[in-house]
Length: 213
Image: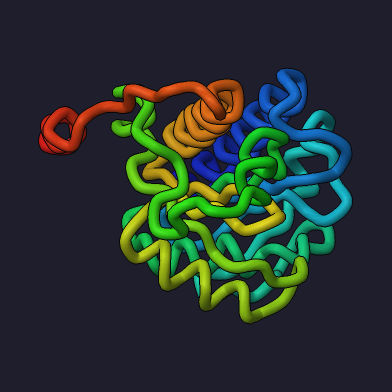
């Protein structure tokens, strides 16, 4: 019991720390986006509805049982199902980050991209931290149909881009999910900066070598 309590305290503080870091560096704004982390007993901690990531109170985070029942803290975000379906699809995940980050959202609005892998492999770190980025079709925020669309794509990728909405990324740890999300956003920014230019992405052989290591 003591170890779970100390783990929970640590994760609560880490969620608040990561949220403030993302907010202060303009990866999120207002009360958009949400973060969750999974305890070793399967329970979830998640940023609540209408909360700014820049001023999270660790004690007020929403808490869920391993079965997804809200049992403590402030009212949960209506996007809680996004996190829960990512955990279902990615069984080894310990954290999920969902943002409405500007450049990734901009990419999610463009026509003519490959919905199975939206961004090209521009850098080695993108390949290593994000890999493939499938896009789920648009559904209104809170629509349960979005859960199934995300779950299907998350079975093959730990990062999914929601059309006209934003990215959701799972990681083994919260730091891993944070770093992958940041790499995704910066790659989206690069992609938009380079539109109209002739690109030299990594070759399939280079990508395969990175994935093997």
